[in-house]
Length: 471
Image (tube, rainbow, N blue to C red; front, top):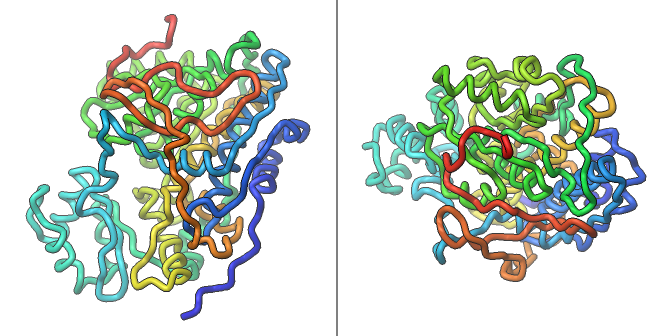
């Protein structure tokens, strides 16, 4: 089958201008932004670099706008597309070791009627898939056993069985199949960012800011997220000066990406299923500006921390809510990660067709996670600016699937698969961390007066008490 014709590519500036207008931010600020370079950066027919550059630039320019509101300093912002895209690789090494990104059982499997992708980076997800297949649980089960067990099965039937078991599996669909699917249609009916005023609250004034301080200095952000998109949001806000407090449960596992995404953050442990943990979170919320969460839909509300409940605890707060497939539609409660949303919504099949490959082909980076995290950082700042103008408490909803729909809307890159991945070495920096010597990408946004970066080193979960700095 011939691959479909590639559509015209939207520029990063055009994409950013739409984001900016949607957030009701002043158009005059766009004159202070320089965008350098164009796709393709990585081998893909999708506008991976364009999305990375536009989302990162939107977050950085929003920070510059906040700084101007706080002290009158109008900073210029520049974002190079190569730097932004390579930052979205989330590559890092720790003490000279580059962690393996995937468990040996994660990835694509051929079924009787197509392909499925499973995600087994967490041991409980791995053991759940093995249990569903009637295989021995544990790390000793070989990939060949999973391949043999899935070969005679229906991809769609296994996807549904896994969802019923609260596991993370996705059948590989074409773009057309996703567009015809009820969840694909639900996502297509949503804007990229869903803004909602939660209730009345007086405008919260900005604290004074010295011109040498980063724009978000003193902004308090509670980060209750775990896997890439949410942590990237908090990492980005920390790069612009925010006090970001990462809240982990001591009972839940983490993947090694937490080493890289925790740069700039404080980190505490709270057990939210216990009264003491809930009381501590309420105390933190009472003095927070932004609350970022990526729990399954309804999970935090059951504990007393849904958006409306949070707005009662802290009138005027900005809540950022992340989901996999969106907050409406039959899959609104379904768990997933970037790789699964790529498979389910047609990206892997589209890339396979364009490459003439035998198997589905993943995008060259987990761009749905990365772009969504950057958009979350943008939304948090834009909503805080709106709160200061209009008052109220605010909720902004985003999802990986909505970001995927946005990526598709920006068009396809002619000859994109022929691109050669640039070296990341010129974009790396070395810092100390709670795990050892960390080498990872610098933040790609360049500010004319207050450079972005992380003053606090990445630390292990639970290093700090559940308290704001200086309290």
